[in-house]
Image (cartoon, rainbow, N blue to C red; front, top):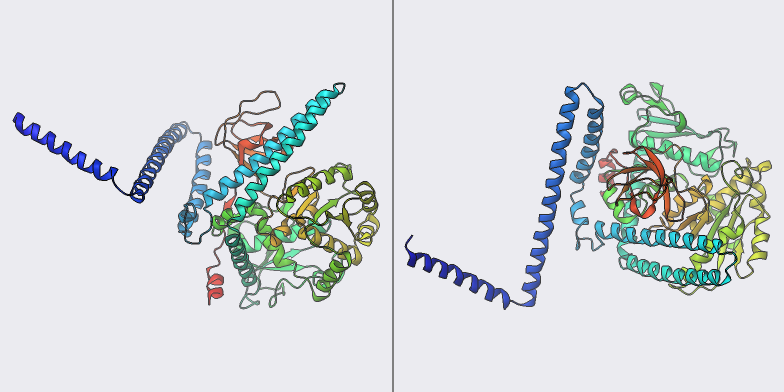
Length: 585
């Protein structure tokens, strides 16, 4: 190319660039913002491509490992990756069936609610603040205990604890107000999701022809208490939903009421309560029972094989909406099953309302469940009333930042009648609500009787209606109240304090957490974490640390609670498209 042509070409390119830059510089603010958004999107897409590239490289390395190991005759690695492929397929199906999932993850989706990413981040911050407060409070208390002879240090620690508590409550109030900015959407979404599930359960329980319907038989008489038996029926219902079989509840000779379930609650079906069928078998592998009309269930402890949809699993087709709405999706799902199960007969409904008026039960109120008889010393430790009231006081201190409180009320549910006068004497500035007759019937001597059944139903009902729950999650009654609490509140996942265990469901599949941050152990009791590690959680010590098993390293120990997140078990369930279509018509 001749020099003068090269010069002209360069000048032309320079001129085009200058024209473009001048038009860009003098564009309106809106155009600048539009360009900025496009640049941000481009950067995000570039980051995504980099992440996908890293994942592809990792996958290529893993595939090489599989090939190498298979050539050596080692099949264990194949089983690991077969399981990963199965999990990946489940999530792929989830994304395919829920086209709105992507929109939920982006701001400005059509329903005007916050994005899934926004909600996950908000809950992460809220949990982080709580865990930081637990850690700070615990460490400062240790310093205070070490300074037994140093009054100045102890006084200063008390001052810091008090100031830190004020700051924690301020942040939690701000986070609450942030969550309320989408209050209308939350209420609407909660109602619609609940209606969807209740309609499906009704469809399942009322087949077109009971004579030919596939059925699942569940006997309520598991050898345990009321809360445990309720959870047994929920487990049965979960399997019925997962296998699309109508649940037939056998409750004759129930230890709590010889008249059976229907003495206090409405039947689980309006049209199908007959357990007969042309063929019958006990629970077994799917291919052995798929053509059997009537299948009988054992208790969950003896269940084999164990399906994926046992608690704490949630259905894949509602998972995106549920994960966006609720902080503990599995508890919400169990609460919906309890909502369908526990429809009171007219006499019980009247009794509940009359008792509410008699006790003067009204909100705001904190519910506390104090277990003092058969569990203490075996399954649970003794906890004095002061341990409960410490967290009651913290709740009201926080609530007073959001609203005016006329009276600090506490509903007491206990199997020990002495708890009520003990609380009244120790905390005269609180209004305690309790039915002493219920506490007496909850004693071991009269626990399995009609009056005891009435008492425990009322206690659970009022605990669930409370604004906050203080109890021990080692108790089935406490966990049932927490589950039902989700029915009465849009999201009550954080409206509790357990004095011992984290939430769990008896007979559940593995409860796992995923490490978000690296952790280097600082003592022999701690374990190492790498981002992505799967942790089988054993418990939260409520001092900033949790205990669990790192499934990568095989080590059990403590780790900072804020460095992990819960792994939500999303499982493929039947879709119930016909039920949803009928509801729309």
